[in-house]
Length: 240
Image (cartoon, rainbow, N blue to C red; front, side, top):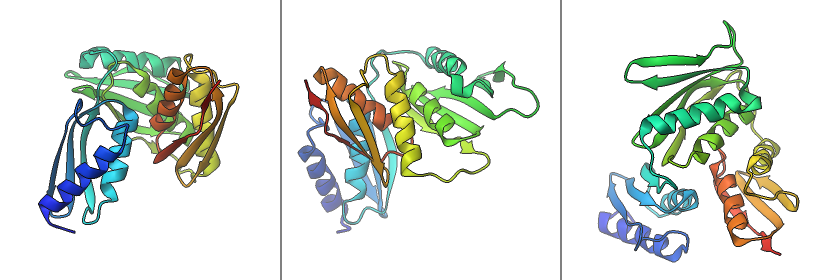
């Protein structure tokens, strides 16, 4: 299936069948040319964004995706306010205490914490139309992933592009991925992690156990989606 109209119709049909993608309230513009699908618009939450990408790439004929989807922010904030909030969150994160932190503005890069000539990482923060870009490098995968989660937690963030390298390169694994998801859940003050079990296999995270409310069930799932490298979340949490 390579015909433009057929591909677009198939993509929209898969979106309509996914309950977490609300096209009526959050319409997504879909275009297709030369095997590349472009998705543009604002979606309800991070799950809707990631699921849209996963469903779209599985449609026959789609060879690549241009992602222009943004998440509707919990609070509308200007780019400067988002950047400052991300900066403050990263400065307070214990796992990033040995990283140099810099913020980008129209005047260039400003160093807000200098960890010397040989830091364990250098994180550059910039924000454009609500989308946070984290660039440069960190020392391990947990640092990379936690920085991304913290950026997503800023109420005004509409997207997080985690472009940081890990230096030296670190081999990833299911346990590494699950470890950061557990850490994110533990740090989230709105989630009770005592009865949540996390498993990861081939970039698919499964949440099992129970939580007291539907809101916590959703929040735990969103926290897992926020972690870089998670391609799918299976939420088996029960309400008790």
